[in-house]
Length: 268
Ligand code: GLP
Image (cartoon, rainbow, N blue to C red; front, side, top):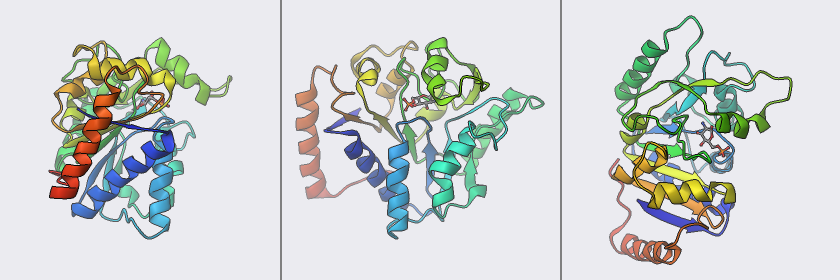
């Protein structure tokens, strides 16, 4: 796992945006894995900026989102489809027909929908770069603690903590879903690269468990210890519980030297 620590959230977003731009520049039909939540909003702002400055086009990009609430109308402002439209898709030149979320209505079978989503990812050639945030309990996507570390896209019941954490986004009289469709941990592990962004002190324990804790279904993000190309980008607050911060910073400088000498190499 490569751990990169920045002074602030703005730098985390800028670095993540450079990863996306690098992928799009180097692969003819790039496939992005996208995330919702507050953390990637700043990344999407940077991507929109790059697009407006003519530095980045999404014409060749397809995307697969990590998760979507179960049985939510896409036009509902709380749907992750609306989130993606508002924060990214409506502001760039992506073809919306190439943007996918793991949807499931009440009349559809969640198991069949999960299998279809997995097949669609495969048909697109697999995910090149999966953007991730992390829940305060170590979840990735909506893979809550005890999720199978080899799980695939399916319906999950959210934990009380996740419902509470996300309640800030709902009005008091608004219905808040407690189930969601989510890529599994196994789906995420099949991405060629994983880029996990975490900012703020409330993520510090989960970040420490993910990087230095045991590989355990109790911290779903710890599965990334087994990923060949997992990059974790943190601000100082999210990194604050890590013991070996000096090492990560030193290793990052060494990597910069290696990249300057040999060039970046991403095996997309
Ligand atoms: C949500 C999403 C995750 C996200 C996490 C953290 O429940 N399903 O994909 O990473 O919570 O969100 P935030 O970035 O708002 O802290």
